[in-house]
Every structure is written in structure tokens, then in C-alpha cells.
Amino acid sequence: MGRRFAGVTEAKTGRCLQPGEFKGLFVMMRVDDLRESDRGWLYATVDPRGEVTASGPIASCIRCHERAPHGRLFGLVDAGVMWR
Image (cartoon, rainbow, N blue to C red; front, side):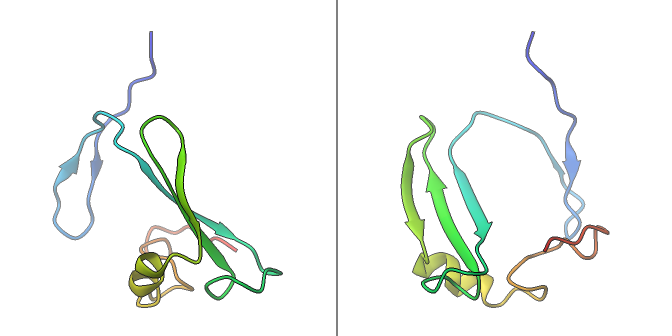
């Protein structure tokens, strides 16, 4: 029997988000010592089969994350979690 997850309430809208079919994944990885990164971050996308479809300093990811208030991260400080 597979693991079941309860819904998560979205902070801004109060909507309850429920897990569904896996569509893909966006990934961020901290790489302080890598020159070709977005201020120490690399990004990647993974398709539903688990194949990496893009990786590195992805322009569309950078455009969004450069506006994030907490070191390229969204929402983690308010939730009481700090990543380094």
C-alpha cells in the first residue's frame, strides 16, 4: 500500500492543495563553489519518467528566483525553516 499524504494549506490563498498525478519536478541545488550558477544556486527540471530535461543556471528560473526575498528562496523563513 502506498504512502498517503494529507493536503497542505497554501499560505496566501488558504486553498487546500492535494497531491495528484506526478507531472514533473523543479529542483534547486546550493553550490557555493561553482562559478556558473545563480548566486550559488543551480536549477533543474525532471519529467514524469524521472529524466532530467534541463539543468544549470536556467534563465526562466533565475528571472523568478531573483525576486525571492530570502536568498533566492520563497516562503521558507515564514514557515520557520531556514536553508543554508
